[in-house]
Length: 505
Image 1 (cartoon, rainbow, N blue to C red):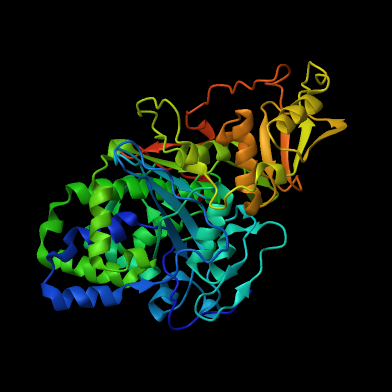
Image 2 (cartoon, rainbow, N blue to C red):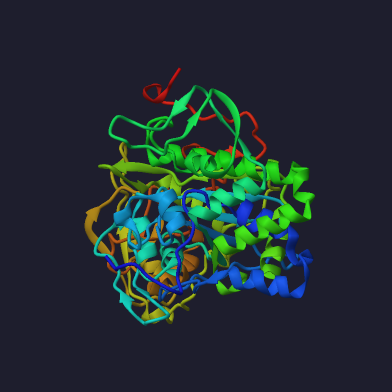
């Protein structure tokens, strides 16, 4: 793994990713601080890095009827021990200057009409393929990972822009900005806002006999946490529920929701001195992309974020299943990603949209000419109760040829089982071709998916198209999967369950 980085990149953040403190609270002061020189000083505090270090891009979503587009911000927390202060808060002596890991990753999606916000957390031990990334400072090339590796390793492949590239490859979601925050910043900002109320259903001490744990010690009920105790809450795994990273993500969601409410209600933030202190600490704690590299830009972003009422904020965790000690995305994860791509509110309170914008998931790569696109068609109409329908691969291949896809071929060697008709492609450069094939057959963009199980654009005719030559797409399910464990931003009764092995009296 690549060694520690000095100078220009001081990887920021840890388990808190507080757009609330770093891009919502601090930014409230905006340009209202003490004059232009101080404004320049704050700008100088902010560290910058490139947005996307990968080769592949994801097209921006099409504006809605009012000309508005969604805004997607990736919040990244690093376990870097790059200063003495961060070292004391975060780890052992031997970890000083080591390659950082993106141990917290949350995607904040602000809807096009600014009426709602969705947050999707990805567990740090999610298995993903990290794409090839190039460090813009020294042109070092980090090759794509061989097979799947833990997603937190992406930060060490050239910087936060590789974490952005990894997210875009996995989700198909265009990311506009990223924000990172460091250990010391978490502590100081929590102090500046006067504490954030959190709840546990029993006394908790996050420490086992081997010394594992954050050291968090709280009494049963609700306690305002600040400073190092706030950091402990956000880092706690041992003691919450099953002791997994999934439980930690849930605790982070509760904290962030409470932080938003605190920032809206806390009158002490009207104090110029406290605002100045918060601005100083927060800007020094931030690393952002060039699109957010001034206080003015961050202030404008905060105004966008503040328009959303907490009752329209939905926190979720990427649906996953265990693979040994790690996790991988499930089918429900793709459902969640699609809702974000199509700007559908996760709280279910959107007015029904007639048709999602087709280019919301469009590829940045244009499709080849129809007669140059190779397509393999497979019969996936077999079900648990029905044998495969006859000649479906050949029939659909004939349709494609008639439409000008002269390189389409039928695979008659196997009968697969697929509930819904899908178009799969193996790599980003073929996404546009796959979308073109899907459109010609009337298959919705949400049924176009990337897969390493295919070597080229592949149409799998599913059990929903057992006969006829016209595909009728089933009605989309636009509900948030239960496995995403959605938490509403206005829920003041949320409380973390304490594992009985970590209680005290």
